[in-house]
Image (cartoon, rainbow, N blue to C red; front, side, top):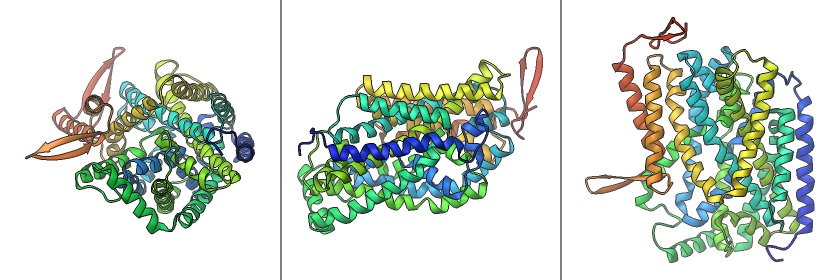
Length: 507
């Protein structure tokens, strides 16, 4: 069958599973019923998700459709370097275990819906909090666009072209997210994760058998990379060590600063639930490692797609029957719906709590606040859809790289504040600004690439730009916090307000 021919059996299976999750999305509003006119109910599921639900939800919005598409594509293109996603996920779980329960407790105690709410409760003011919120929203937009790119890739693998199917899927996503809030992706995440596990287990068991075993797969991949030359290969090249390590570390520190992962954490019913999830979530790392191997299998199978993003659908289309292609495409498309929904909800929470409320209407009612969040979630999704329809896909990919650099710059304000009240607001604001500017400038100078090469004594060390900018941010923040006086006074409306930065709290 030609790649561009309509695969009717696959399409039928795809539509059946897509219809299933659509129904689940709408009935989710009745699950763990609460007053959806309150933002903590609509945007955080009432903070009532237990260990099982949180495990599926956090895993669902952490391991996205573009993960299933992009990781094998990167391995297919550059080999071992693409496996940096594995140590990244290994690093992130101890971070979750140590930091996120503490953040959950602080946010639960203060009834905070966003991490920016927590920062505002400690330091007061609104401009730095607005900067944190804007950083989260802007960094999330291309991330949502990439989920839709992943969905577009698998829809095209069924022989369906054009933008109408993607627009239809977007409208369905927007409708049940608006209606059910976070409960929709939480319920759909159960179906999504089960389907993805089935796809991965079947593919990594069956494909090597058809290709002569894993030995043959690695030999074929090694031979192909040898012909390419350069630093590609199934073994990491020494010149890639520093880039590999810093990308893993920087990505791990950034991962749970994004609004969608933060929303997943804050929706848990207790700090203990967050800890237990940090223990069980590594099961997804095993899944990710198996997914990455699909890139090597595609090389061994002789797959030569027009774009590397097409690798996984093309591999499944060649080696499996149509019904399994439809099932796999549905699993990947649903893997786009869950994180896209949570991302739009997380961005909407930031908008209504930390931008609209302090700058437009401080006396907004709970119902009005929730309505604003619903509308904001629609606008965020619409912006992401417009992005991939009217701009080349590579812009979303390039901006997503910048998104990781930007989101890292809110790390000191959120994480360090959990452990010390000695940081000062002007210092944090200056550090954030320096990190954003330096990270953006370095990335732009590299053509929006994530790595910058540092030279020491004739040796060259490629380093993740996000980590360079974060280190600058931290250095400035701590230096200014030491240099500035312990108590700062600010005049506003003829009133003197004291911000006791050295001891925390606001007065």
